[in-house]
Every structure is written in structure tokens, then in C-alpha cells.
Amino acid sequence: MRIGEVAALVGITTRAVRHYHHQGLLSEPPRRPNGYRVYGLRDAVELARIRRLTELGLALEEVRDVLADDRGRDLHEVLVELDADLARQERAIQERRSRLAVLLEKASGADLAPDDVVSPGLVGLFGAMSTSAAELPEPALAAWDRELLALMDTAATPEDRERLFAAMRPMAADPDAVARSYELYRRLGELTEASPDDPRIPSLAAEFTDHIPADLLALLGPDLPGASTDPLGAAFLADLPSAQAEVVRTTLRLLTERLS
Amino acid sequence: MRIGEVAALVGITTRAVRHYHHQGLLSEPPRRPNGYRVYGLRDAVELARIRRLTELGLALEEVRDVLADDRGRDLHEVLVELDADLARQERAIQERRSRLAVLLEKASGADLAPDDVVSPGLVGLFGAMSTSAAELPEPALAAWDRELLALMDTAATPEDRERLFAAMRPMAADPDAVARSYELYRRLGELTEASPDDPRIPSLAAEFTDHIPADLLALLGPDLPGASTDPLGAAFLADLPSAQAEVVRTTLRLLTERLS
DNA sequence: ACAGACGTTGACGTCGCGTCAAGGTCAAGC
DNA sequence: GCTTGACCTTGACGCGACGTCAACGTCTGT
Image 1 (tube, rainbow over the protein chains, first blue to last red):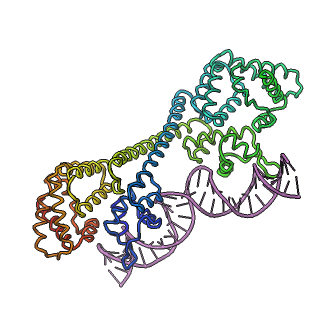
Image 2 (cartoon, each protein chain N blue to C red; image 1 turned 30 degrees about the vertical axis):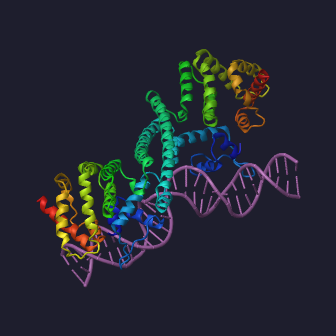
Image 3 (cartoon, helix red, strand yellow; image 1 turned 45 degrees about the vertical axis):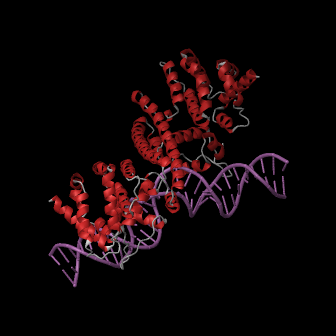
């Protein structure tokens, strides 16, 4: 047989056959005087073996090792390992699909924005908030805060997220609390052009401080953004107009005091 | 923030961040006088968005399109398509795992050779044969035939295989039939050194012909290897010593006559 | 002053082939 | 004999999402 025939017989391309030669998986067969390779049935059987193993997901190098060692022990180990690997992949795909399912379900009712691609827990949190705030316009700064939450969603460990979202859920589900949050954000928004010593700053900071529930504060406590050492806090403050940054700084100071 | 800080914040490598810049997923931020990139919170949020989408399995190009078009319709289509793709992958993995499971189960009892990596149907067929022939030594040519079967396993369509294996199973499960097969193979093996006009050839061919059940012959009928046109038959005969090839040729001729 | 941890650009490696490019070979039909 | 078209040959680049040097400049702490 010539290369195209043997390739068609085992259902692969001629390119793949030559590739296997090149990688040392299959020894080069004899040639006709014109240079054409001549394959026998043994080659076809060997190719079929290679193909079955690669279709299982073995890398070509592993296939080569298996065919070289040529006895079962080694193959068995490889297959067990492969099965574990496939199991991992399967779980990963299922995880992704479940996240997708949440998104697609949500999208069937409402419109879908790119920043909505977050963990199911956070989707639930946002859903609760938007229900609570059904009639209220959302202040720009609150939307920004939501983006920050989405950012945290990728940064923290799953357990941390769970606890954080659990602590926030009561607030998100309470229409009064959400309305109060929006009111505070609105007043913060009014300070865009204010000077850093505006008289409204201390009182607004105090009200923000009072608005944070004790359990949520306790949870946040250990790593309250010091705004001095960590780059996240620094970038956060650097992005805000100075009066607003002052409110945040004061609020953080008050919260730290409340913790001690 | 510098690049390492923003990368750590969203849980990716600096190389990935620069890659995203290079691919146009994220615009280049301003630089310090020393050339260092300076990132703000918006960049971190954007990176987190990119990361969430890529983790779902979107290609960078798709992510770029989604972020560019920036409204839900397009994203929704992409996600539906993605879900379908993931579903395909999941099925493929499950298929592979189920084949692996058959192999691993079999391997726990007996030893495992590379050529045993075949379809479940064929594994069952071989299992039935080895049970039927528990006490008999397997002739070398029968082993060779088994390899050919494994070869067909990859070549034919699943339905063809199913029917073929179904037709062969009664023979494989019948100890008398298997013993008879082995006997014929043994006598074929004795012809390795014989001349092409050895007197044992016609009778052996006749016995082989009689040994094939009618239903199996009917199934094989349409594409009985003519040994003239198709390369598989030619290679098969070319690989055999001349006397044995003569037996095969005669048997094929007799079978063809029996069909007409 | 110097070590060590950061940053910069640029380029090559990964893996299993697909896909040209630039030819040579062969059987069939004119 | 000539052409056409299907096959064969080797060699080299492309893909996708970065990892990993290399060769170098910059900042920070002791």
C-alpha cells in the first residue's frame, strides 16, 4: 500500500502518518525506487493502535513510550492517570456549564451585560439588590462599587467569597437598607467637585460608618484596606476626586476605630 | 499599580497582561517616566472581566469582539454557542472515560496489552473467544487475525461494526466452533514453507469455506476482499507465504461462488 | 555600593498536525 | 506523444495562549 491507502484504511491523514514517522512512533517502511513509501498490513495495524491510543487522549510521546515498553504494567499506570485527568476535565467543564446555565437563564428574562459574567453567588446578590431597589435609580458610584465586587469575585478564594456574600445578602435583600445605601452614594456623588475640607465630609463618613452592619465589619476587619500599604487601596483612592477620597479615608479610619 | 500588582490582584501573570495588550484586548495604560506601566482600578476591573470570559472558554478574539460590541445580544449568541461546544466536549470525554472503564476493569483481572485498546464490542467478542478456548493454545495466525479485527474496528462505521460483531458472537461463544477455527488455523500455519501447488491447499480452502456460517457470509458479501482491486486485500496476500496466500485466494473464490 | 526584586522589549518553544510551496511519478484519455 | 489530474516527495510556516529565557534598566533596603 502507498501512504494514502494506509491512511484511508485507518482513517487518518497522510500528514499524520508522516508526522508519526517523524516523531519515531512508526518506523519508516521500505521505499519503491521512485521514493514512495510501501506499507504492509503490520504497519496498518500499528497505525490503528497508535490512533486508538491518541484518541483516548494520550500525547504522542506517551504513545511512543507505551509502544516501546510494550508491556501492560506501564500502560495501566498511564491509563489510570489519564482517567484521573479526564475526570478533572469533566468536572471543570461541568463547572463552567453550570455557571453558563445561570447566566443564560438570567439572560432569557433581562438583558445581559459583560460585567454580569460573575459567580452564581454574586449573581444572586445582584439579583436581590435589583429586586429591593426596583423603583430606585442607581447612583453611578453604586454601579462602580458593584464592579469592584465583581473584581473581588475573581480575587478571593471561594470560601472567602461565600462568607462575604452571605454577610452581604441580608443588606441586599432589605429594601430600606438598599435605599439608604443609594442615598449615601448619591450624596457622595455630590462631592465630585467639592474641596477636601468641605464641611459635609465628616458627617457623611460617620453615616457610612453607621450603615455597615457589625457582622460584615467583623468579616472585613482583618484586611480593611489600609490605603497606605496595599496597592489596591491606593489605586482606589487615586481614582476618586479628592473630597470623595477624603470621605473614604475618614470612613476607613472610623471603621478601624470601631473594630478596636 | 504596576503590572505585577494588578496581575496579582486579578490572579493572572504579568505575561498574560502584556499579551492582552498586544492582542488589543486591553488598551495600554499611561507610563511612568521610567517606562513602567501604571494601572488604575478600571484596568483591574477590565482584566477581571477578560479573565472571567476566558475562563469560561472563550477565545481571546471572541472576548475582544464581545468587549468591543459591548452589548448583550452578541454575548448571548456566543454563550449559547459556547455551551453547545462544551456539551460536545463533555460527551466526548464521557465516551472516552467509558472506554477506559472497560479497559481498566478488564485489566484488573488479566494482563493488558496495547492491542487490547479496542471498542467495547470487540472487547466482548475477544472475551467470549478466550472463554470458549480456555484450554487451547492459540495459533499464531489466529492472533494475527485478531489484530486484523482490531484494525477493522477503527475503519468501519459503528453500525457496520455492531452488525459484524453481532454476527460473529455466536461463533465466538461456541467452544466447538472456536476449536475448529484453531484447528484450521493450525493446519494453515503448517503451510508456511509449502509450495503454492501443495496438495493440501484445495481441501483446506474447502474446509475454511464450509466453516463460515451463512449469515456471516451474507453480511461480508458486498465487500468480500477481491484481492485484485483493493489495496487492503493486496497487502494481506502480499504479507503471506505463497502457499498460505493460495489458500486464502481459493477460499475467497469459493465463498464468492457460494454467494452467487 | 550592592544585592535582589521588580520592570522593559523581543524572540523562541509548546502540541498535533493543517496547509501551502515546489516539485517528481504515474495511469488514463486525446 | 502530450496533457490532465491524482498521487507522492521534502521542507517550512501557522495555530492559540501564553511560558520561558535573554539582555537589559530601575527601584528599594541594608
